[in-house]
Amino acid sequence: TVRLARIGSVVKVLKNRPSKHLIFIPFLFAAIALIAFPASAQSSSAQSTPVVSAQQTLKTTTELVKLSVSVLDDSGNFVDGLKQQDFHVFDNGAESPISYFAPVTDAAKVVVVLETGPSVFLIKNEHVAAAYALLQGLAPDDQVALITYSDVPREVLPFTADKAQLLNALGNVEYMMGSADLNLYATVSNLLGGLAQYPGKKAIVLLTTGLDSSPSSQWTSLTQKLRGSDVVIFSVGLLGPVLAANAKNRKHSKKISGASAFASGDVQESPALAKAHQGLIDLSQMTGGQAYFPQSGQEFIPDYRQIAACLRNEYVIGV
Image (cartoon, rainbow, N blue to C red; front, side, top):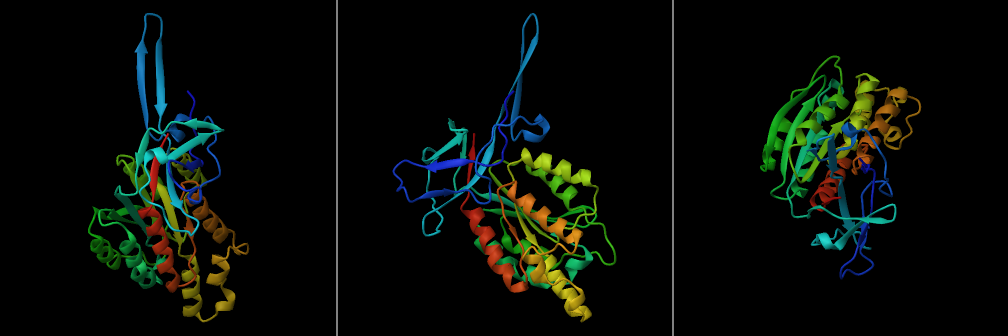
């Protein structure tokens, strides 16, 4: 069995489109590679059909690799209205037939995952107040849900098209006080299993410090699942504002690496912060999403708006 690894794509816009309209695949790598991975880590959609003969049993496996694609023109504007025939996907120079296509107009299911550890409590008003920018940017028929986590994930709001319910739920979240385990990777891993039952466009928006206290094996397990998933992850790192709030509250900001240092990636002084920072980048990049690191409450709004724009203007292609 030959399997395509979902690590990127080369896609061209043809069919009566000016050559200046270019495919932009946000934050994916440059090409689809033909790689053999374990079946448990690679299959986005698999069907097995045993064929019985007098001598042996032959099992064949077919797999669908899904790509999330946004299209920008030279001015940076999203291009909608494209059809399946406008896209061509190439693997190592050979064109792969498209067997699945979901246009921009298809509704998306978006899960907001919020860390409720004690540190995030310090900035809850900032990112919750800005959440309207994300919700206003989504399409009316897009559905949203809310999952919170510290040690374990908790479903606060199931999928609903009523965006006001999410705002209300975010405003009433209970945060853990004192010390708490943060099992981010296990939470995302469990969520992928639940989202697998839904067809079409799916995304996870992580509002998190990126810190995780689970064993390193949990990261390995999660990355294997992501290789076989069609869920796009957008990460919003909360550590910058958290560090700034700590500095303000304790009135000795010189002893604390401020928000700007973390947001700029200058976190070498703390291995834990560096690991959290890179983990959010990796989670987003390997799924075709993006990681954001706002430095203050004011920066949440443009970040949320950009996430909504990407979700609203996303095509899903299956090969």
